[in-house]
Length: 304
Image (cartoon, rainbow, N blue to C red):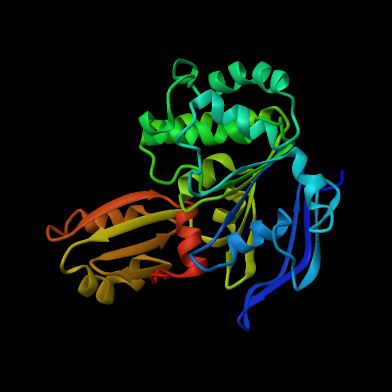
């Protein structure tokens, strides 16, 4: 099966700085593929090249079998985009935003009108059909942006941090909707800073840093490949001193971050038993997760 989205050796530089550096990707029909990385890793530039909005300095990309940017206009007829920031028209109602957007794809008004009820139901916005955008909550606006991206019944949907700024209820509703799309056979390319979101939604993902893919695979594979199975987080003012004395004894690997110590272990019971006798320390025992992988691969320092 040919990939729905493919990149080979993509490169892009700005002002002499290599933003994307030899990127290879192959994303297949019906999968949700996550692109993760710290700020400045090259994710947004990669999305823009795959959409054909900017040309690479080197390498090739195809979208739905068409070369981009050479045939980007033709490819994007069957693509939906959920941008990082909502850009809905505040002067229009919910339904009017869908109608006007559909016209950009050359759709007839009657065709768009026929799709609007299903789109509103999908976004749980049926009761808001005639509401103006400024009256909507943040979660409603985000769901409308998602519905708008589906007005042309796309085969591929690009989602740039689709749940940033939403409360847990809104995030879970959008997750349900995105899972429904992959079950319909649509292909999703997702960027997110929420590791639980990526772990929940993505069939496969790639971690980017400094313009390169540094690890790729299913969430479970990446966790098993990179991190010990158990994590014990140790908290307290004396945690640093404790780590210096005991960290290497009880943990295969440990990291100190402020007043927290992250201990990565195969078997947590000896460490937990030890910590139960340390009244000055608190701890949290949990399974390893995708955030542990992300921090190990890209570091804990802040990125601007």
